[in-house]
Amino acid sequence: MEGIPRWAGFRVAIVLAILSLGLTACDNARSPAAQPRPTPPAGATASADREAADRRAAEQAYRQFWQVSWTFDQHYAQNQWRDVLGAVAVDPELSLLLSGAQRQRQHGITLYGAVIPHPTVPPVNGKNTATVRDCQDASHSGQADAKTGKAHTVGVARNPVVATLARGEDGRWRVSQIRYPGGRCV
Amino acid sequence: MRIRLALWATAVALATLPAEPSIAAPFSGDGPGGGQIVVTPGDNGGRYAPPSVDTTVQAPGAAGGSSGTAAAAGGGPVCRYQRAADWERWARQIPAGSRSAGVSASRLGDGRDHIDPHLHLYARTCKGVLDYVWVADAGASTAAALPTPEELAREAFGRLVLPLPVPRRSPDLRLRDGSLAVVVGEHTWVWVDAAGFVAQRRRVAAGPVWAEVVATPVGLRVDPGDGSAVVACRGAGTAFDPARYGPHAASPTCDHVYARSSFGLPGERVTARFEVVWRVGWTGFTGAAAAGGVLPDLLSRATAAFAVAEAQALVTSG
Image (tube, rainbow over all chains, first blue to last red; front, top):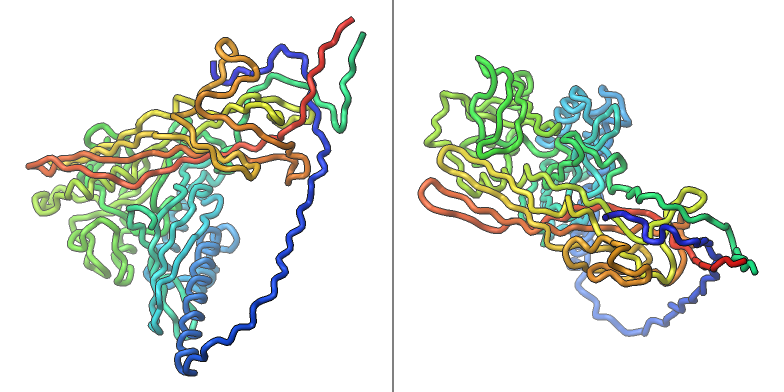
């Protein structure tokens, strides 16, 4: 008897009430204690700053990669794909994506939704390649029929992804490989 | 004497219409396989990872292996295969560095022109879902190419088809403006359709080696969407049955009481999230001995948006 309305037969009227919501004021004003900090050597500071900047840039590039690569074929003409994707990806991932999108278009398939990255970036240590580990939420995205919009696939909420990024001569990070290692998100 | 209902805001009439849950995906919940979407771990976009090797078939289709159908060994879905010679030529030119997870480099190679010449690229369509796979031709050395049961288990894992949960709730009211609602202060029963809460299996085999993956639903988690804690339910929850339970009874397995109306929230609604947790394990055979293991849990998820309305029920007399 699933789905039988619970109050069928009752003469009940429902009203939406205007509720006055109590607003809670948050007092976050705090006075930071003025404590002296030890000063690290200038070289160490610069190195730490560079490391932090590299990791931030790699993470940002990774997030941008997913935004662009998931929808580029819907927003740009096919003769622009390589340029658009080339801003966020390099081979072999670039070629895989270009061919994949082209094949999907031939078969009337498009992507819907968006994957939500939750990346962590291990130390870059000044190298020109970086690894990003992601426990991606893919549960609102997948493949769909391009004509009807009917969903064919949907991803899982905790989808492990490992990405390799390469720093180009222009200093930009781009994704060179996406792997799905299986296993659990850690 | 007629007692009138005081209306604080928009008066709405109770209707007895079934719920229409909104699925997490922005499209219909009906997939190409006839009522289900394929829940795909890994590359659910189907364009990020290189093609894997399909070890369950060999040179499928008609003479020359151009196209045809094949059923996965061990009773999987019937899949259509179509040779993709142009893409194969292209794939063999992909620069070095690309490799399929779970497939040894000796089979697929690790770069340009290293792909086994006995492997050919096919477009595979299973349950309406297209992907591309490498398939060994009849001349391939099967002894050297036999996969491990672990590899087959990963292949089977990737082909698991999980039904999307269908959220239900009670009370389940339709307001005059067509929106769906539950009631402030009432026990709201929540559950998912039992038909989608049963173990799902997928078995693949290559020669004497096989693996069978079983995903078993072990619980339902419901985020009521009102900021309160996630409700961990036993099983799939309990469908409300008016013949067994009173109108104000609490669900024995999965229940939430909304303390305030959704007025003032975005869209004047809450969005509840229903997650079914699937425990996944596999058993198999190496050709000489039994094998088995555990794979990551899977979640299938759907959402349902509805209003939480204040209610006053008054008896009419005279």
